[in-house]
Figure 1 (cartoon, rainbow, N blue to C red):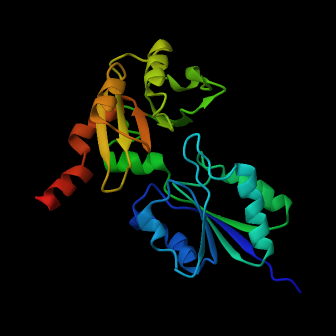
Figure 2: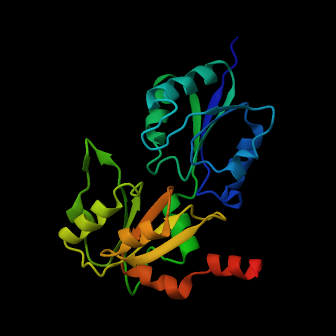
Length: 255
């Protein structure tokens, strides 16, 4: 009788290994083989047992070590070999992580799987930057969108995101930052709307640039920010001046 393997899609959060769920940590320690993305932090990968096989599947912008379809099929193949397969994804598997596509293939192939949520980048970046995503004085809703282009054009429902008292969080927007800021203003947000870009949130390399839509792109470029980054737009950003804690704590420790 063949041994049944299983696949675990595990969200690793925004980078700090202490933000892993208890279940995610346990599954990392129990894995036979680990498929991981570019954004899974080195500190989290250091938790993988030496005996476990590691397979890098990339996912840098325009530089995928393995196509998504190939990843899907590899997960099926490894599970059918009877292995305990861990698919590590930065953030949460179901928030711009293509987790849905992977489990569609697993389900259609009769492979057992589980999904373990992770702290998505928006929550990690906002918390560690001191920017509440909602606040009863400033924002009663929050939307997550991707800043990736499709066929050379931003595929964004602008009318849905430029609403009053709403926070907009943009994933994968670094390359199109200038255009994103222009389009948000063109579709109704004031140029003075507070905005911030957070680099490598929750890690020792975290950096935050706060500005407004008219100046964010220039400020971010001048500061030399690099991916991975996340953009937060809305009145809540101005609370950072009072609520920022992570960088202040870090500076105090270093001092």
